[in-house]
Image (cartoon, rainbow over all chains, first blue to last red; front, side):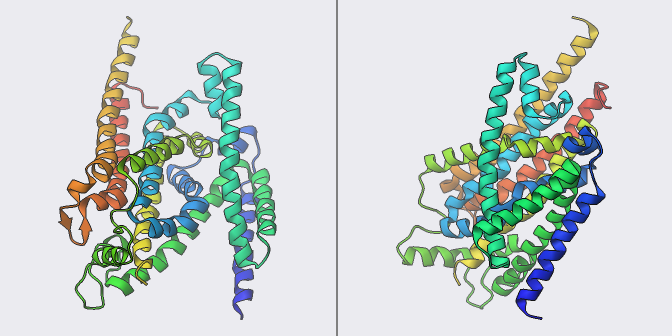
Length: 306
Length: 86
């Protein structure tokens, strides 16, 4: 079979899997639709949160931008994961305890004000809209590569699929498709990373391979070689970057605070039964995110000297 | 203050204390080791890693994961101590 046939087959199976999950987990009530009936297990919620979170930017482009920016790329690594810590410690458990479905609901009740509630709705819409615009573009790029169609056609195909399973399954459908998505995503990211790591350094763990000596017998550390290459070409050393300390500090801070407020991640913590489960699933989600987030900078390092 | 209120405020005080400690560590590993003191830490090498660079791209993330699990443990214990566990 040709590559094209394989691609159609694999994409087709993935779509069928997602739609199958949506039909199997059809929403039957309002609570089902918004928060999956509040009965998702912490592990499933952790996986769904992790997949939700990492989506297009982390999977498609993060390793690339770190390879390009070197140390400066750390702002994305620390910013996004560090913001998640703020979310898990300062926001998620309390919102969950409060017992409403959305953040505007909380703001409205907490400040006894309809106006505050409307302001919160507008904020949530602006945040979600910008976020979705970026993600959908990512979907379009992926489909345009796989199916060899125009990017705009790719965006439309993606939207139809998502619309179908979101409307049918609500939060419950989305949660279980996200669980499936996490498995696909982490497998697709880790397998090549492990093999490149073995090839470059002889160490099967990319996180360690990144700080190992090259496997070509030269006895030079990979990172030293990289620093040497970039200074030779007239750039700043890979491990130093070119941004000032104040820049790195401020960008990291902005990314952290923004991450802590992502509406589609906050709503995830309403889908578990107890406050205790909300905390636990937040921890599991970051653990699952960290697997990819500590591998990405290693992939960047492996990609650079070749 | 009634007994119930006293209990609630004692619970909250301990909760805030935990958050303060955990977020101090959060700040130290990311903004501290990964950014502010990066250059000083970079003089120390562990394997092929300069330490400051390692904290920025690897270490801080490991610590973040540990922080959340420690938080989960502490809060579960606290909930039990004050009888708030569901």
